Length: 126
Image (spheres, helix red, strand yellow):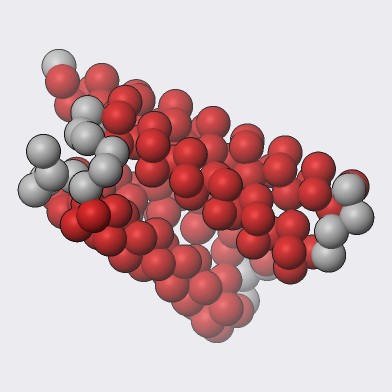
């Protein structure tokens, strides 16, 4: 079934991107960058790789479409907003430990991203 293949590719890309972010962030910290700079650079690199792999491999769409890139950026911004809401407001209001909020983010964001990517970011591309 095509959907399962797409879900598996999406998941594989997510795992690669998460690993790239963790490795990049820790390597940049080890190299002496400040935490904020290391986070920003690692995040930017991970998002760039995510765009390329999700576009080309997962959703099989061309890379150089400005409207698609803008929709992707909006989806990433929405993910950031949801993660901030969960870790900064919902989790604390519910009395969750930080690890519980972070776990909720790691479960919710991939589902949110897959839905947004499939129905909006890549639906009109190509």
